[in-house]
Image (cartoon, rainbow, N blue to C red):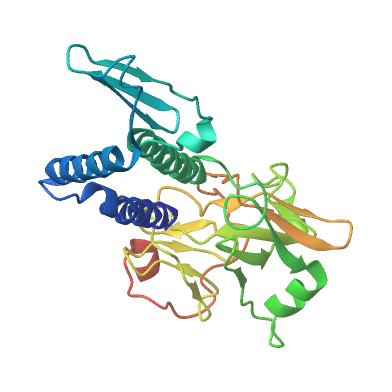
Length: 286
């Protein structure tokens, strides 16, 4: 969007310059002849009004014309001209058309280059905070736990759109000795799971009946903490490092995506009910 806006501004600027210069550039083809005729008329009228003769005894054949700072002495034998020029300041001289066009082109090119640089930096520069790629505030830990655990004991994960992550409880009793014990993905009994299937990148929805994640694209299935269960997925669902702020808020670091291999011993039971997608593996059929 920035690039499109910059290009539009550049085109409008060039169009404005063309309009401003249109009056100066659109001269008639015979403008030189018109100037010559006007100059001849002005010279002729000036000669008629300002023509003076010197004393006939000194030189009957010479004529003197004075006009401002310009003096012209004519003679039947010889013609002498003396013209006095006065220097003017740069402000009085103004700016030439060539200088104006050169400056306008430089400014336009500089603006266009600056917009392009800002656009590239927007893609390459990492986000410092807020939004996916940075640290996302998911809310109070206490509120998240109340939202996730239902009255009948079932779970519905809290989905955080800015982090593209599901928040789910992770029993600390199952944490000890597991591959998630020391990698910073579980804090205060909560973990953040990336919504993307590790097979081909589809978004994996939560299946409330089976209490797990089931990918509708190719049938990969994961239990309630994102551990692999069945399907073509090569590993567990990816997850993010999490921490708790001094005010008790869960912070998800979406700038780091952590992978984990398939668990030998699952941390939670799955499935706990009917599947939301068709059976696609031998484990499901069993």
